[in-house]
Image (cartoon, rainbow, N blue to C red; front, side):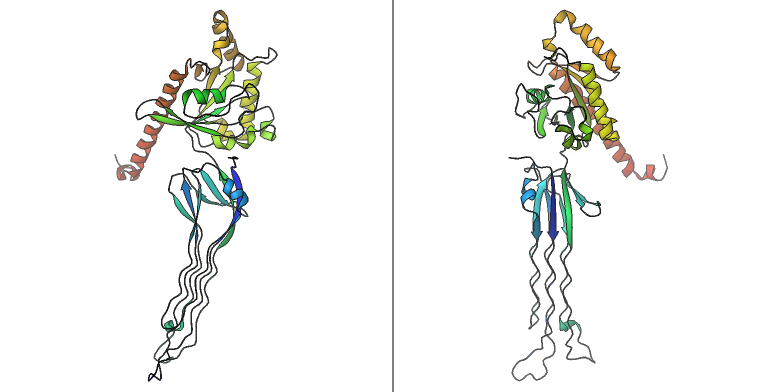
Length: 357
């Protein structure tokens, strides 16, 4: 299936039905009085997060979504039927914003989350609401209110704990295949990854995390060069970034230090917040290095990059170092969750909210 992560749609809620100005007419009842019912409510448009959907392709070709109007009221105190609501199922991680103002309407972060995008109009009143001691035969009624109509922008940002970034052919697809259940296309030429891939990495019986692989970046990506710039937004929700570097490039004219610096530069130009995310360096294809020169070459690379953060040496092809990397990631994510839980507990504790010990 073609991957689509952006779409523009229009949602139109149903109008409320008009009220009725009917009068009761029965044999032997000369003055029956008003019996006009209310109009029905118009249908609303809802968005539902569905983890079984992973693309917005349905909304690329189906752009207008119209809910039904409410039925008008009728005599004999008959109220109009409400219009049916419609539900738009979208991937978890979809951001919905107003196309004209840019205001965030909804952020679908959990499976089954249901949010109203456009509310249906309320039905009009029938003349039964206008009778009084001085107005026993009212002819008044009101029209139904129009439903909300708005243009929306849908933007999918995949939810993952870990994001992979690096140059094309750095081995990102091979790594995600080695450590998770994802099976992306792998080939010996650049840009084999054309859309994000998600994989679940299981470290234990009850310990796992989600890893995301996006198309490789090249110099000038922040200005639109290559493919990766379109998918960098998918890394904005991750907890940690893995910067994958081909430490043993096939082309002798390629300098890994220059390529690594280019990625860091493009990341900063694209989004400062993304640049400031925790980022680990993963040196891939270490099995291609001569054992006697391996330590020296890696030391030279780290010195040229002036890197002081965590470093992992792996071979995605034969699995060397992958287990160590996965356990370190899981421990780090567990610590983040523990810190978040503690903050939530403190926020919910009235002693801390009141400034008391």
